[in-house]
Image (cartoon, rainbow, N blue to C red):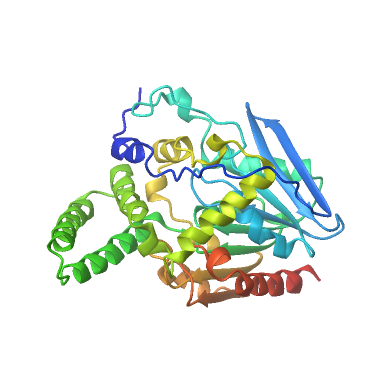
Length: 355
């Protein structure tokens, strides 16, 4: 049995943002909307393909996580579907793909975690391509999904026409440090508040940050750092507080369209815990792979994102054919805070590579 004090099981699942299922079910009106549920390596994998013509190029969106789902991207993705067949994949154990629950989240068994490895996730992606019977496609990876996109392109480069990395997490350790630094700045500001409670809370968080910094690189430091990020997500991942509500609304709108069940809207714990245990997620660094990919790349970052910083893209700037685009008015979710600008940048890049 593996014991992991997952910051009280990733703060006892408090990190999962449970989105209430509101309203009535309505029918999605797209030229083509295909829903797939495919059995692969002992699990049911769900993905959806939407577009105006199957003769258009294909674009796979790899969601953030580990443990997220495709719902937040469906609303914005419509802006790409007149030019591309957009594939929305719920990664293994996420969203509408079959869950792999642990009998005891505080002490998962080795057999329970084996479903989740980077090798397995990459094989799942390749299975999706084969199921669609296409030779080539584009990849868009967001956050953790950018790490997957990078590794997939490194292993299956012959099938990749181009890669878009949106607010990429390419090296976990730098991401952790960035979160701690940004939180420290917030707390330093709060120490000057006239409110004694605000000053007290800031002092407590600063002490906690110092403790986290002293931890060795590994699962405990990862969980504590990202626990801080989730608790202060509005301040650390959005340009404006309204962005968090916009993300909620866009996700909920997609949920209503397809009649998703509440459990399918909650981020899954199992992939993250398993990747920490099996593949040393906390020490993963794919910058070298990204810098040597044999395809064109577009890297998009939001300035107001504490988790994905320009430091993570420095090694890519010199890469031949790599474009870097930075948005001043967004954080970790530019497809929510600056959707039109993001679509323009992506469409320009994709069309330049498709012809």
